[in-house]
Length: 434
Image (cartoon, rainbow, N blue to C red; front, side):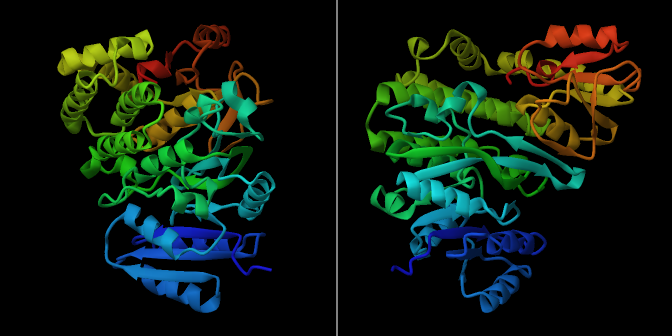
């Protein structure tokens, strides 16, 4: 019988002395014992290297690579080279995982001879004691759970949540297809390029509708909050385009899809950029999208009319585009400033985003509760905030309700009015391009 580990778990680490122990303990406590843990220290200057070496001395499954600071992408590529397992898993050094994660993923992978197995995950804000389940597939695509598929059979795999850490990958699959992380400096969105390569080349992809991975979202060092890296997502999409061109199949369909995704993703992440950088960022995005149009890789007849009209507005006059879609939100900010208490209505992805944005803003102390029409049948919500059904007297009379759902906003407005609450706004007034 082979002594090869079932799964090699790669943990890229840089200056995580406060979080690495919780992360490592969760990996070492896996019910699947035949694993190896490859910790790649990216030139940490705190106590991280010492902590890693102590773990390696106490458990033979832990291997440590110490190297100079060459970035997240290079760390993961070095980890894959060092790994000997049948499958590769990735855990970020400030996150943690459920004890049965790799056992469940490996059983599914082995049973289906899968190149990739991915699962749902949790998002948590430790500073605010809040956690929510994210489904890797949307409700309209949930029939893709628990079946073997690939993008050739069903293009909807490209609509799956873009993660690298919530799954496992057959190592031989990664090596034979030369699938690597982009080796740009720092740790900024390099999992996006890895994701698209795995989706392109996988013959057998399997999605599991249970969450195992806990993703931190209140780390001030996270790239989505790092103003020094406002162009990193744009650069990663350049890398993703190169990956598509190298793949060279279905370009007429895949290139327009990628440009649309780039456009919408960059606009979404702009909401996390400081106001002083937004005009500059919009100008960069406009110039990038213009190149796609000039190359003929995205045009009117290759995307839906709503997206094309927004793209046309952006490349025609990026300043007017910014004024239309973002500047007017000052009115919404004023309402948040004036509010004595804030209540978010909803329990889905939109509500999770709004709650996260508020909890990491100056309005955090005003957020008092989460409102739902019924507690039954809603996604799992773990929070210090009360989750309450809309009833008269359940909330402060003058609270500002932010209705955070995709459809049915008018219906919720009517329910609020009926129960005596007249101060409300929709999430679209905060994020018009949700």
